[in-house]
Image 1 (cartoon, rainbow, N blue to C red):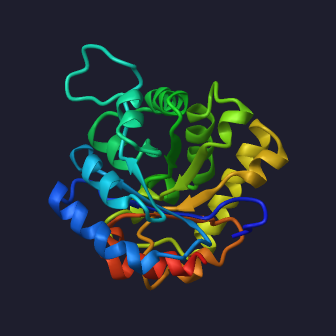
Image 2 (image 1 turned 180 degrees about the horizontal axis):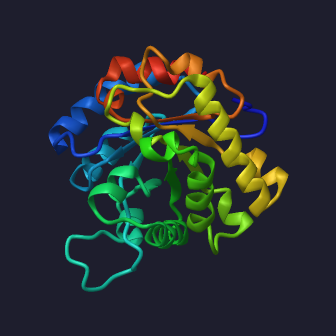
Length: 255
């Protein structure tokens, strides 16, 4: 990490876990453990039904709350969806867009990811944009082409000024929920390539200012090594974000 140029961000992605009551209890348990750890931003992205409880429990702490997805439309006949305006009014500061599970299970495409990115930004949210290759794509040697395409399409129509509110999360699909993790060198290589893509789209200074997380099974044991890499500025944490002790270890590793 190079904190002289960009912010470190450790964000938990709870996925479909925790009820509202469990959310409040968890944050009250976590808050004192990460209090005063100001070397990075601490974010919890929670299910929609947990947002109110999370925002309330996080008041007065250094924990910020995010959502796990956002719809591209401001309103309309989209049963079951949530708009950026709704999230913003609920007190959400961040939103995850384009997670591999959304792409794999719910038909998310590069184009709809782009629409969601712009919806989040237009409603004042900081967007955590996920990109990453499948195992087949890695084995076929097209990792760079895949993440470059996803990044370029997702940022289509996003200005350099808006880019300041975008975090890129590199999450190799083959390392999510599988127990497999890219080596620190593999993760660093792709994060550096993503930074290069941003430089090509915008400028070198824009790329250097962009926070790039690693999101493939970062945990308490491997966080320090991954976060020691020059181009890895934080983590998008899955399972470990549901355990306050493990999550605290990761936050401390980012200090």
